[in-house]
Structure formats: C-alpha cells, structure tokens
Amino acid sequence: MDELKPWSHAEFEARLRAMGDRYHIHHPFQVMMHRGQCTQAQLQAWVANRYYYQINIPIKDAAILANCPEREVRRHWVQRILDHDGYAGEEGGIEAWLRLGEAVGLDRETIISQQLVLPGVRFAVDAYVNFARQRPWQEAAAASLTELFAPTIHQSRLSHWPDHYPWIEPEGYAYFKRRLNEAPRDVVNGLAITMAHFNTRELQERAIAILQFKLDVLWTMVDAMMLAYCPVQVEGWGAYTPMNAVAAAGS
Ligand SMILES: O=C(O)c1cc(C(=O)O)c2c(n1)C(=O)C(=O)c1cc(C(=O)O)[nH]c1-2
Image (cartoon, rainbow, N blue to C red):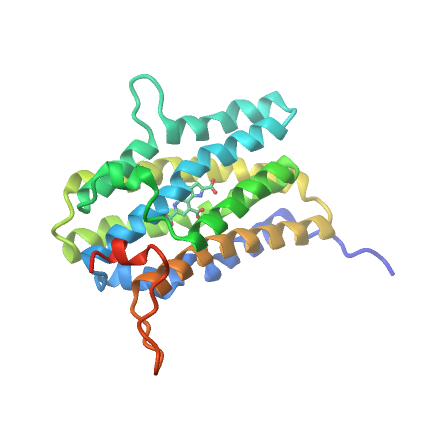
C-alpha cells in the first residue's frame, strides 16, 4: 500500500492547533478557578503545586539543549532557560512565580520546600522532564507546543482574577504578563522545528501523539489537585485526603 501523503504545513499546523480542545483550560479545576469559585486555600494549593512545574521547565529545556547538536537551535532555545531562571538584572519567571505565591498568601519557604506538591503532580512533571531527557530533541521541542494555547489561559487570569479574587496582591500578576510576551515567541520557534522535522505523515502523526502526551501531563496535574482539594464524599467513607493535602487546604 502507498504511504499516505504528508499533510501540508497549513493542515499540519491546523491539526496541532485543533488539539487546544483538550487543553487544561477545559479542566473543571481550571474552570472553577476561572469563574472565581476557588477558595484562597485552593488557589494557594494550585500555586504551590504548579511551582514544581515552573522549576522543572528550565531543567527540561536544558535536557533539550544537551541533546541538540545544532548550534543555531541552541542559540534560540537557551533563551527559555534564561526566561525562567533569570540573569543579571532580570529576576526570571521562577522568582515571579514565588511572588505570585506570596501574593496569594503563601510564604516562599513553604513553596520552595515543595511540602505541598502532590505525588500525582510530581509524577506528571517528572514524566515531561524524562521525555525530554530520553527522546530526540525535536520530539521534546514539539511537546512544548501546548504553549500555543497558554496565552489564552494567562490572559483570562489577568482579565478575571482581579475581580474574582480582589485579595490577590497586584504584584502577583507579573508572571502571567511576562508569559504573554514570551510564549508567542517560543511558539514560532517550536512550530518551525516541528514543521521541519516531522515531514512525513507517519512523523506528523507522531507529533500529534507527542502533543497529546503533553496535554495529558497538564491535565493529570490538575486531576491530582482536584481530587486533593475539592472534597469528594464517598458513601460510607471519609473525605478523600491524600497524604499531604490536609496541610495545603489549611483546614
Ligand atoms: O499556566 C499555564 O497554563 C501554562 C501552561 C504551559 C503549557 O501549556 O505547557 C506553560 C506555562 N503555563 C508556562 O508558564 C510556561 O512557562 C511554560 C513552558 C512550557 C513548556 O512546555 O516549555 N509550557 C508552559
């Protein structure tokens, strides 16, 4: 049987973008957050858990660099590490995330200690880092393409949280503002790599599967948080409390 023809770049990109239907913006925990239905304890728990993602993004990007023999690609990709870690005169995204944590009422030692990070969140984030370590760098670059959908979620937080959660210190919003500038630039670069490398139908379908894997990482993180921080009542059984959720919920 003849091999299927590759999709045109336009069709391939459209198929990648269509996967935004499965982005974590549609997860019930994110929907609750978006509608202003989260308690302060739930928002704090989300920020503390997401910290584990934030600190692992530059480690993931360093793994991509380590696997990439192309200087031109590294010259661009290294900027992602600097965005998060910062450099002289630039505090970086991780510091901005810690300030978001403080703006929602956490103290930075608690966040940095990772004591609130749930096992499910840890497993999901570690799966992403391990993917970047073990797979060809072009595959890991394609996995970053959930960033296609990230500006929408960052913008919705900037637009709605100040009304819904007036107790959040305005200082906390710096992280989301930064990402509005950084993510579109990353996407242009990530898409160019993906278009160039995944150039047969088989490889294009592989790219779709990789993006689904990454969507699953993000979805699984919020699944773990929802189970831990939104009370579930099972008849004849106590409330569900994973090991370290009690301290996080502050109840
Ligand atoms: O708040 C979010 O919903 C969200 C999602 C994602 C994403 O889609 O992976 C990223 C970010 N934020 C983000 O801030 C960020 O720096 C980032 C880097 C990456 C990546 O895969 O390299 N994703 C994301």
